[in-house]
Image 1: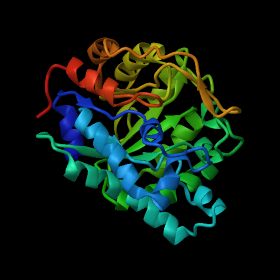
Image 2: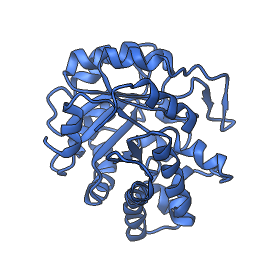
Image 3: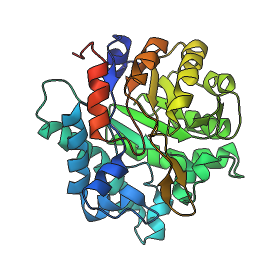
Image 4: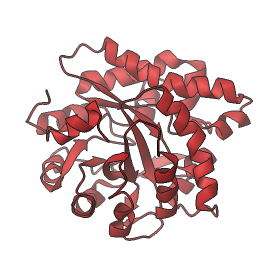
Amino acid sequence: MTSDFADALASGHPLVLDGGLSNQLESAGHDLSDDLWSARLLAEEPEAVTAAHLAYFEAGADVAITSSYQATFEGFARRGIGRERAADLLTLSVEAAREAARRARVDRRLWVAASAGPYGAMLADGSEYRGRYGLGAGELERFHRPRLEVLAAARPDVLALETVPDTEEAAALLRAVRGLGVPAWLSYTVAGGRTRAGQPLEEAFALAADAEEVIAVGVNCCAPEDVAEAVGTAARVTGKPVVVYPNSGEAWDAHARTWRGRSSFAAEQVRAWRAGGARVVGGCCRVGPDTITSIARMLTVRRP
């Protein structure tokens, strides 16, 4: 699929992703402890979302990932928000990132990736790190397609099918994204060289090799130590540009709803990921603007 974003990837110039939206919002004093996570602010304080995106653009990010990761019709319904209003909020997630791009005082092109998190994100119980929810591929496709339709209609530069824990959900997403007219990347969450559900990465990435809509593949929301192997496998199996944005290295305790451990993310790792085929590099949970600035500096070939 051709698009300006696909052309940017094909040029070979690296692009810098943003970092964790939730930690940036929390650092600004916002409470994200409920089940909607950062998506709650779309309804209550959208300007805060724009400000968080702006902080990353001005830190050196080329691409902002929207606050729609945990924004679903089902999740909003549990808060008494109807489908029409929920669709408006999904659209607003893209508009908030676009507004941040307009405000950013930078001299490079900026991009917006519309996040579509996994089914487990809607459950808000950590099951996106396990997968295999007991649903069939058809049920998962019916869950994802309406949200993807709304996000695609908001005209982001790319759809971020992210934090996918298993191949069954990946297959459902690949069907759900067909015919939307917006390119996508497919990004798994992995551990120890396998998906979170335990499938080999060769099998996982092979699903996207011939998917026209998918212009990049990769991993996110994983330990930095798991990135290098995944980059090599993704590039070899698909021949497509690779996107990587790991966590800080800390571990999420779903029961306590807190992060534990120490950061192991070092910007110096980016050079190895880049050499292995990564074309889009950033951070996920607990990675902030300072680290994104370091990543941008490590990628010494500046973007046009």
